[in-house]
Image (tube, rainbow, N blue to C red):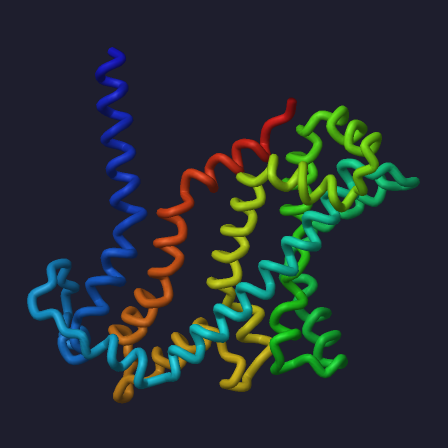
Length: 275
């Protein structure tokens, strides 16, 4: 009976993996099809017969994809760095510092997670436009530098560290900032790495806000570039070139996840445990 359950489990996992991986396979397959061959297919072909690299050349020549990749890298690194600084300091304050109203303030902060992000997009857009930050990197970056979920995750992780370490450090004359940087952060490194990687993925895949806040090509991210490629066909959408651009854009994230997948799982697991 156990063997049968094990076999059925593996079959379900394999089927599920194929369903998850199929869109990536279709993206890669389409990126090697010529524009004419793709549009001539009345029935999709799932096997590559005549691969071509023309779509990858079109991806870099049709739009300044390298420029968009650089903009995306700059946006991702700046946003992630600022978010980590804010989240670490806020989580430490709620986890270790005791001040009047801290519990109520944290409860109000958590309540923000109940508000859908779409409800504040218009308000944020109007505010940044009034401040003259539209079509600028600060306008792209500032709305994403704070995350209630990451603050909560770090707070729970910091609270797992025994209070005795904090009191011992205070007796030795260690400042709160030095204790945070030399004790808490090294001990919570898996969670910090997980948050960093997840934020990088989130920023790299950002679409709605960059599409809304900028219409200047100087500040376009890869999401805007892919949308441009989509309309570069000869009267029709250039899907193969768009898929080639998607392969180029997705490759860094796939490599990042494969390299740090164990760290991500470890950090999420530690963040969800108490004691």
